[in-house]
Image 1 (tube, rainbow, N blue to C red):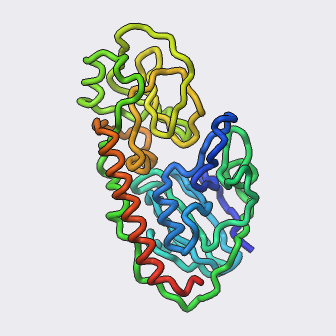
Image 2: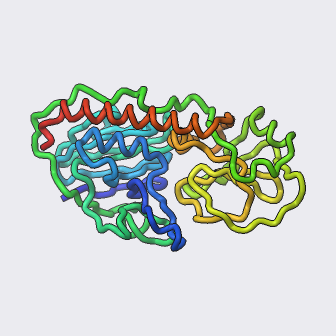
Image 3: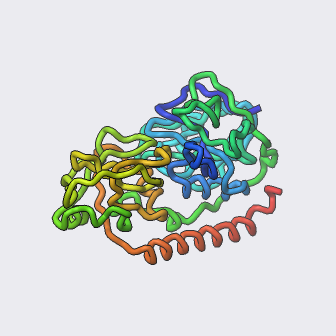
Length: 321
């Protein structure tokens, strides 16, 4: 038993923390755009942090529950309701058999994450449940969810009498109203003119309509190299900012290619990728230059906060076992 998809939504895919270890073979990592939201959702349910959930983008799905289940909804606010009544996010939520969970339009952010107790019963592909859309494998049949699809649960939550009055502290999660994105110098930063690099941090960049899981094309000040330079294809990562020959910037996201031939001017720090994943087309961002030491400090702070959350949830959720 599991859930039946009444409406698939704009783009709803199964995602986990990604398919690691295969980039040398040209297979991308993929995985959740907002890994922090997915991890917190799993922790709220007593799951392993890497358990797969549903990533719901902008206009979310409508899902019918064929059995009782415990879920959590995290990430962006896509106005979730159960049988027409608004429900709270960032906490365990019991869904009775026969209820319908619906997501509407985005109120804040761009992507919501639905995790379920025990996870979804799906086949792993190369050690991951992540959906790789362009290659057509992983997740649910290698594609986004469609009407009448059915996803099964690994486990069913049976303790109907449990109540959950607590929730995750939102101080763990970035402020989505803050559009400042911290980034380090990329390997080819010094190839660009001083005017270009100064403008990079003194002006806003608009996320264009050309924005998806592969990357965001940014509109703003054009970036010029000191002199033309032929480049070999080099490794890129989630958060790499490349510059095209016309001076435009492309910010690579979760489904980015494994290598690229454009100069890499910036690398967004890991701690700010979740905030970036919740940005929509039409919103502006501003880059702030930081050092690798700053990036490590920010990531360590986040990891320590997650450890504290896990300890607190272990104390509260003995009933999961």
